[in-house]
Amino acid sequence: MGYKVAVVGATGAVGREMLKTLAERNFPADEVVALASGRSAGAEVSFGESKVLKVQSLDKYDFHGTDIGLFSPGASVSAVHAPRAAAAGCVVIDNTSHFRMEPDVPLVVPEVNPHALAGFRKRRIIANPNCSTIQMVVALKPLHEIARVKRVVVSTYQSVSGAGKEAMDELFAQTRGVFVNDPATPEQFTKPIAFNCIPHIDKFLDDGFTKEEWKMAAETRKILDPDIAVVATAVRVPVFVGHGEAVHVEFEGPITEQQAWEALRASPGITVLDRREDGGYVTQVEAAGEDAVYVSRLRRDPTVENGLAFWCVADNLRKGAALNAVQIAEEMDRQGLLVRETA
Image 1 (cartoon, rainbow, N blue to C red):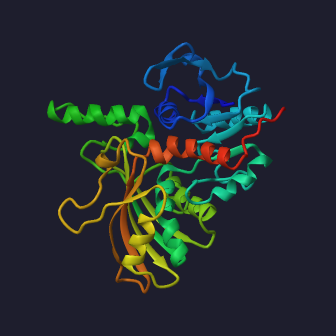
Image 2 (tube, rainbow, N blue to C red):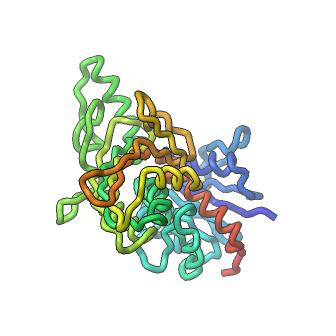
């Protein structure tokens, strides 16, 4: 018998990707329900190649009898409806930032810390990490097992899709406007995004870092190891889909390039494409629509005793959001954790 799955925020970019991913991976669902705000009720969204789902109102939906809720409606909406769904016996896998740092909510990347799923019973909520954190910890995990990671310095090159459909529309409009001499009026971003890079994602904190940069540090420690020091600079770039990251890692012990290459190639979810020649690396455009975290340009960092540097890219809507959420559900199924409970 399959599961009943509700996709919350089904009309958004991540929600649509969740529906697509469920169908592509043949997740064992007997019924899939599309939920969104009341103003989207009655709209239609695609599920698989031929099926169309009519969107239902989240506010009116009764979660009793629903086994899994894949949530991506925005943090304030999840704050209200995720606990409501959990109280009705639904297992919530939430893609927003609202629950990530709560100590009794597991923050999970299946390739990295699947054991953490055992803690879901306290709240019946599991948090999906930030997109930029997910791809970095997937790449760090096999290296951490060889020589423990001590410190990470990371610069991100994040696509506009991470800020939603309106941000993608703004990049498109501004890019077109450059060629017809239309002035660029920023609405979704603080400065024009077309042909530009903006070193500002999320709000500024008192210490000068942005919340996006703080998330990468705090989430990496929660997922991988509480002793890892992380300093991040998060940059929005004029790319529609796909996040790139330049990662510099200092280890507690020695690690060679060969050891790193072999460990990365053997790890699930990672594809290594690293040829020291023109084009011998993966870019965001090539990663868009793909499931893997791609690692390229691995080399020794000569500025520290035990250091490596590498470039990694991933589709932020897939592995950075929808795919990771579905993989969490798959892992819970494998572990026998998806047992329907009566509220």
